[in-house]
Image 1 (cartoon, rainbow, N blue to C red):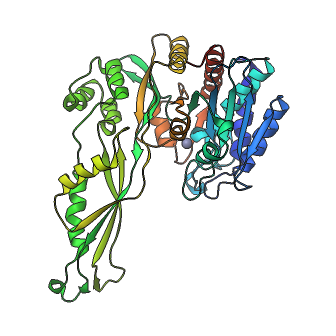
Image 2 (tube, rainbow, N blue to C red; image 1 turned 90 degrees about the vertical axis):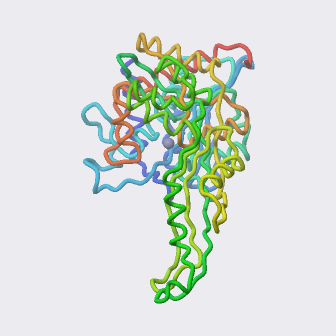
Amino acid sequence: MTASLHDEVVGLLRELIRVDTVNPPGNETRAVDILRGYLQRNGLSCEVYARVPERANLVARIPGAAGGPRLLLLSHTDTVLADPAEWTVDPWSGELRDGHVWGRGALDMKGQVAASAVAIASLARDGFRPAGDLIFAATADEELGEGEPLGLPWLCEAHPEAVRCEFAVNEGAGDRLEVGGRVFYLCASAEKMSSPFELRVRGRSGHASTPSVADNALVKAARLVERLGEFSAEPELGPETEAFLVAVCGSVPPPRDALELARGVDPVVAEMIEPLLGMTVAPTMIEASRKRNVIPGGCTVTVDCRLLPGQTQPDAEAHLRHWLGDGEYDLVWREGQGGTRSALGTALWDAIAEFVAAEEPGATAVPICVPGFTDSHWLRAAFGTTAYGFFPLRAMSPDVAGRLIHAADERIAVDDLELGVRFLRHVARAIGSAQDMS
Ligand SMILES: [Zn+2]
């Protein structure tokens, strides 16, 4: 990469980190102003979409010349909070130190925002004319996503033409995994459904000085919480997990043996696939009496629950009720978000695999389902987009990156920023040279 692209991406990221876009309240328009200035200086026209003025989304594009497939480089500009007391540097300093840019959002995901902006800007300067639109979108409100939609879900609904695309590259993976001397780069092609529920346990209130007169809902809930703590679903293998196992472990075992096989290959691999073999439940909140001397007549346990892509809530509920047994409780779903997947073996997959093989000979791209939620879901649901989460990290190992995301001393290696720009330029060229929509 030329020195100028290196300086450009580092400089842009440092600027983006210096504006506080902690969500809430977000204030993503601060980041949009920086990006708009940068992209316009490079000859790109920008569209700003804001449901709330201080929480804008930015879209820029190089128009397609020949009706080819559209590729969206998707990123979000909000971050989670940071407590300066826990940090070695000011989390909003964007300090450049030891070959890393430090600050809140460096990994999640202002680094990719900056790399995507530099990729499209540099391609525009090069006079690049893709067959289909190359689109850059930096959106608001990914980290929280509660209340009225303001970011990508709102764009898909209110301004679909701004973000409609056949292919998208987003966050979600890109980690370099080394197993037994072989190297893999993980590409997120699916994600689980976030599907929290409440157990509302019924009892009968009474004075705490005479416990036997009442029926303590909190005590009844304890048995259910314990049972949830032991929950394990019958293992299943989705297509991504099968493909992952073939590549990393050498075969597709019967689902029940998958974890054992993975453990034999590497404990890290086992840790990675364990949540991908079935739905998971984690009780996280509980509410009962608000008075010390009143026995609760009701108790609500909130449970974080993640379903496999394609799994439905009625199906999950049947499993849960069977597991918990009869009892005086209601199971109430709070919501269901995500749980979508994109096909493998697409033109975008080929472009990613090609980049990985060229970048590090012998390395291969492998698909993975992510246990969490990303904005890729909205594109898949709205437009049937093939959306993958991929931003390669080579200099920083995945366990280090994993510990820094949403945590103190978040930083990204300058080398990985450069790698990201190279990757995004490669994908844009590969998809942009396709002549049809397939
Ligand atoms: Zn993120």
